[in-house]
Image (cartoon, rainbow, N blue to C red; front, top):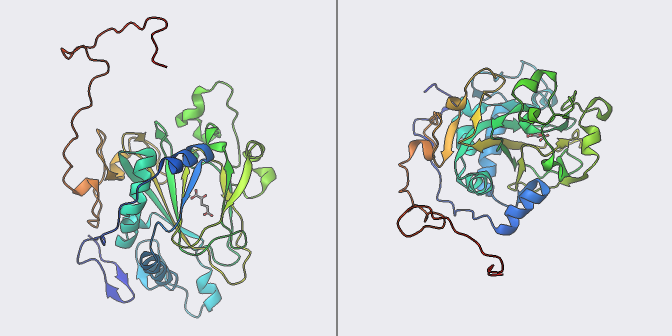
Length: 341
Ligand SMILES: O=C(O)CCC(=O)C(=O)O
C-alpha cells in the first residue's frame, strides 16, 4: 500500500469499512423501468453523511490537499477561480485513493447493480466529475463503446453529490435507445460486439459535443430525450447501450459534482483496462459481488466486497427442469388441448 495524504493527515492505516447500511431492495417496478427506459433513478440511495464525506474529499483534491499519482497541487498564486476550475473530471482514482475504492464498492449501489445486471458484479471504472461553473459537457455516446464486455452487461452508477438540473449540466438520456446496438467506429470495429450485425454502420464522433459532428445524433433523434434531474444522494443507473450526454454547466456559481462508477457482470469477459485494450483484462477489476470463473482483482484498500469476504453458502440447487423422478431429464409430450390455460 502506498501513502495517501489528505488534509495534511496520513490516511489508510485501517482498511476501508462501512457503516451498517440497510440493504436496498430493488422492486419489480424499478427493474422494469430500468429495462424499458434504459435508466433508473434511485432517490436518496446514498445518505448525506456519505455525500458530505465525498464532497469534502473532492474539495481536498481541488485545493491540492490530496497527493496521489496524477493529481497536481494548484500553481502558486492561482486565484480561487483558477483553482476551482482546474478539473472537469478525474478517472480511476479508486486505484490510488481508498475513499474512491470505498465508494466504488458502496453496498447500497452494489445492491442495485446486483439486482439489475448481477448476481455477479465486477467493479471496473470510477470517474469523479467536478464540472465547475462553465465546465464542458459530453456529447452523445454509449458507454459500452468505450468499455466493451462480452456478453455486454455494462452499467453505470452516477451518484449526485450536488443537485443537478438543466442549468448546471445534468445527465440527459434518450429513453428507449438502450435497444440500439453499439455503433462502432473504424478503430473499435475489431472487438465491438455489434460487428455481428451485417448492416451496422460506422459512426464517427462519439462524445462530440457539436451535434452535427456526432454520428450518433440521427440515431439519438429517434428517441425522446429527458433530463435526469436529481438531488444530492440520488443515483442514476444507466445501461451501456443507452445514448446519453450532458451539456455545459451554465450556472455562474454552482458546481455539478458526481461520482460515477461502471460495473459489468463478473462473468463477462473484457479487454478493457482504462484505455488499455489488448488482451484479457478481467484480472484488473474488483469482484464486488457473487463469484466468477474469470480472474479478478482484490480491493487494494481492503474495502469489504465479494473478493475478500468468505463466500456465502451456495443455495440448494434448483430442481431439474421437468424431472422424471430418477434425476434424468424426461421427454414430456404436450398433447394438444392439455394446456392449463
Ligand atoms: O456526467 C456527465 O457529464 C457525463 C457522464 C457520462 O456520460 C458517463 O458517465 O458515461
